[in-house]
Length: 100
Image 1: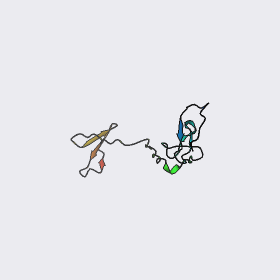
Image 2: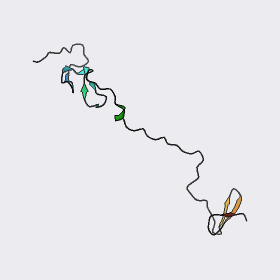
Image 3: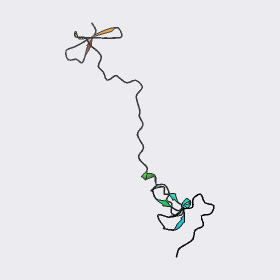
Image 4: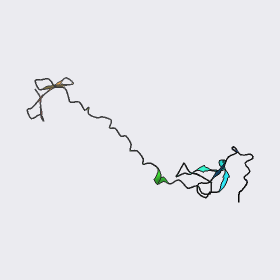
């Protein structure tokens, strides 16, 4: 049997139907569901927020305070490296430094 709903004094004159229990009520009495925001439900059928449905936390961007540059130390063709006024000679295997 149809039911007459008084919308006098409401913000809207529209009538809506609950998405879960299918009861007819004023549209401003329906709210978006916490887990399914596109579903308009009454207060009785509204779910609690499920934290497992939230997106995962993003990892923190941790940067070290003193990082080495990605570019190599510039060398001249003779194999001598100059840095802060000090000169170093590179050996043939490229792993050891010799002071001239």
